[in-house]
Image: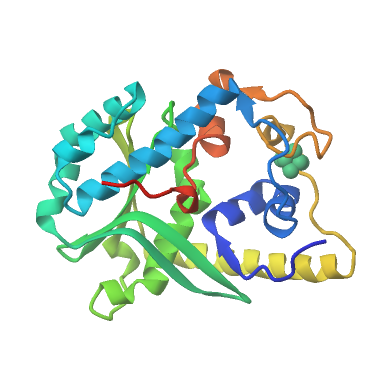
Length: 282
Ligand code: SF4
């Protein structure tokens, strides 16, 4: 039965809703666990995901001031070593600690229609009248900027910082023009993606978020009346790596991650869900 207690929305759940309403229903309302392997080779991809989570933790520990030599000892696989060395070599990131104004693993939230919109940021750096959102990515391929700019993560993170970030700015809401978002790719340290935010984008994004929340709310009502309103996506490409594909009768074989385009790989396979990251003892 659908869970009508759903009360928070996040960039992940909204992205799922846009990509495939049925996936949103199965994941966030039915809370169906993972019945199928997402991609082949399964073990290798799972390991990559875990390393991505671990890398997030290493960077966070570095930014809060734990000595890098100590952290470096924990980079104990080929991928982690390479990412960690790339991070150490990125002068602009290394310089952040000296500037101060760093908020790591910060959560912001605000009411959105009948829901609460919630986002967990890898890092928000505030100095010189500017707020920069950093997000660490451990994708094997570098997605295009056009794809990133349209992602819910970019839109939610920037809009929510305007909407709910006043406490980080002496009680005054940030102007959209003060905000920039940077995706830093551990495999491609010289090719970060930077997006400067504007008032026009903010208005467009917040209106879109409100509209989505209304749509989801009305979907919940219909589900309550047993008039399900969560159709399967028409884009069958979305099903290739989807964990629910056997459930939806959209194929049993997992897609081959090696063959996937950069955007598909990023979308379906290697995004780190902050809530899954465990603690690392230092
Ligand atoms: S298998 Fe396809 S239709 Fe089913 S939830 Fe996944 S993306 Fe949607």
